[in-house]
Image (cartoon, rainbow, N blue to C red; front, side):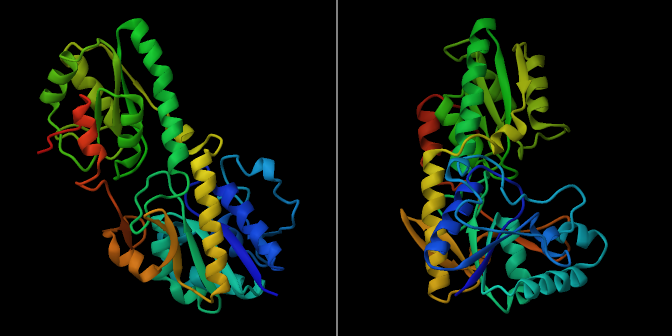
Length: 359
């Protein structure tokens, strides 16, 4: 009988509880024992590790749709790779992780994380040498290579779209524009998808250069005198500092365009998990369990052309555009961005949405 562990790391998102529930359900049907590691690496470093033993009733199915993580994702000041790096104690931290895993005597660990967590897992792979490591991709940013979708993205798009839908009503009432700042870090997928869904007048993302004067002209010549402009948090404006939405808002105000800024912030990482994310979580959980059945390790589950498969973590790291992490020395994080051939980049301008200076 196998004993497996589950751990959620990095930022939270909707869909985490669904994938936990599906992993536990599938594992119990196989006769396996399942433990959840609380607070990610912080809980794993405790002596003994902080865990939750799962049975059929630990996480009721009606709660699996809820946002956040039943296992938590850590807290301010938690012991993780970032805080260990700040104190120059990465090696000691890895020893604690290894000791915690040995104490749990696991056959396999399912790590549910984003590109930072998976890049870290590969960079510190010796820590997991005595067990099977299977990763499941989750992030609202959709900035992970080698998978067509990540858990949490669809719900985040729905959350941001709903937020903008409500703003559109008050915008119409007051003949006003709203500049909405989307999450996504340096990837514009969330802003782009929600912007097309809501029918934004403009979408500004890090991957495409934009001209502020062209943006102003576009808004002034729009068929309405109200609307939503979605700005990804990763954009920059030469010669200006501050929050991206504030920078764009100041430029619009200077041009005589009445506007307000709006920041949905962490509501994008909340909300009941959409059906699409629940289905994806179920499929990737099943794929992870099959990977354990097959003796695979150092792999990530992925959605590829509507099929689920596993890819090597080494391939995941090599496939992305690597960026040096500012908080963890020597770590190269594997990133994906909006592709130049993304179909939405054609759809948006055809529908009158300004997305920047595309060819």
